[in-house]
Length: 512
Image (tube, rainbow, N blue to C red; front, top):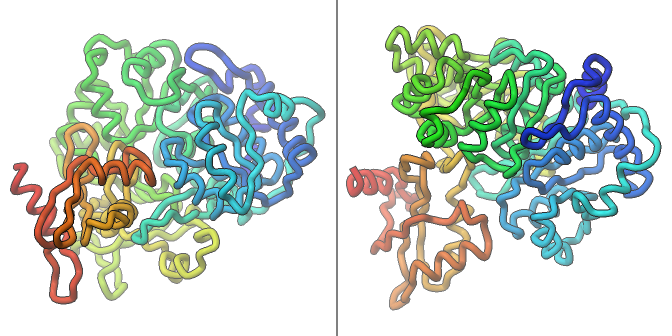
């Protein structure tokens, strides 16, 4: 059940429907996209020497060629490794090495960064720059049939992170992705042929996952010309296209409705905004519904169970708002119909609805195969068929889930996950830093921002500029702390564990 068959099916049913569009300019119909994919798949094998099961990285901004590369990989029986275009070259190097990528597609704007780390890699992936003669050559020649794939075969290696701060590759199979796709139709929204999805959020993450239901129904995939999220551009695209949906982090929704263009924009073509990836404050949600109407749907998922744990549909949003049910609006919705979700206490026993908080656990066809090359981490995360999310939540009496906390201390800023230990380990490279602890602080635009509490070594002198430079040399810019607090000691319990709750309370007290 190769996921690439979604494309060949769409090409057979709606051959002349626009498949890929850049801004307002059509890039390819479904007939053209399917034909191009079949040829590129052939050349991935004959020209690049790739074999079924090889991993192919995609380090690209949002452009039409991203979708072309994805489906060519699956058509040829390869596994895609989408990588966030915002990552630092050192982080790119780690993922390429860890995944043992045999090839890497890169957009021209990121080619210098990709080339700079190649010499240090033992795997030496073949680098192909989009738009180069080599890229164009991959689109020339004869097509090949889609390679057969089993439900359990690896399709998408989704790099996330855990408490260690090191990225882990969640192995998503063809079956996982198909189950997620069908769940979208059942519990989130419908898609009609000729509708469109605007990919304003990174294709390497949530937005890319929503390509599947739209391909399955012959809908148009629209890339902003900027290659990223720009509120004014999004409003312009909504006015041009019809049946518009897009995935957005809550901070993106907030930026959209606060943009000056929101007051006069024509949003008649807007069908659905699917939001997720972080908490949406009720006040922001109410304002968004007031500006845009009942067009918001929420999903809660993880890379390990992609986009599929719970959902709060547009109708549920509208009903909760009409009843003044803020508690329902603050929830992450009800469980998808085709999976199991439970909340367990510290002993692993289920907590009944209305009975209190516990760790959220998931079981079903959307749960990953495991972590790439990390059997111990897999055994820790998936036990007796249940994915332990690390998130703390509780069900109400009606079966709606509310998340209470993120037990892994992940910071979500602008829809991107930032893992404190990863930042802490970089800061500890400074010889003048004795101890450090990184926490998130609420931010009105980005959701959260990174704050570092730093204890300097005796007699050492450390400046914020030095710590900034250290971070920028090793991790992506968006992960570096926005504020440094120099303190004499970090609060700890009797076992020596740093009490991040006290650090957060200190920030709250200083910034009420």
